[in-house]
Image (cartoon, rainbow, N blue to C red):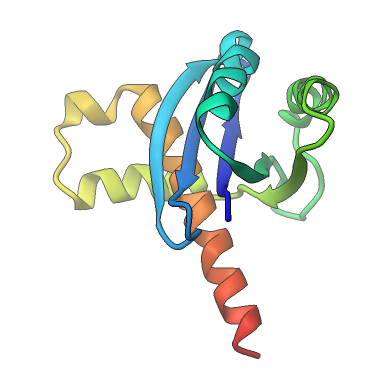
Length: 142
């Protein structure tokens, strides 16, 4: 079994999280400048087997694409073209950034570290991936 990867795409940076090979535990692995994402993933795929890439879909409170979607779609289209054999799945990323900030406070992270956007990006990707794993676990129990 390969890993699952979650991408919290942004105009400037991308938070990345991955599961273990059993797809049980999600861990933040990096924050990469968005223009370097393709290179990062190419190198990562050389070392690791990946079954699926989850991409955070920025939705508004009504479940419709938000303003950020216009930056995400071209990035996603390039990734799909570069990695045609890879499975991509969009997942709702609403509230992941605010949950990430709250989690960083709760785990005692210093304010100076919480203010680094890179930390919030990788934490948001990890939360997104954990939510996905939980939803798969609950749907298999039905």
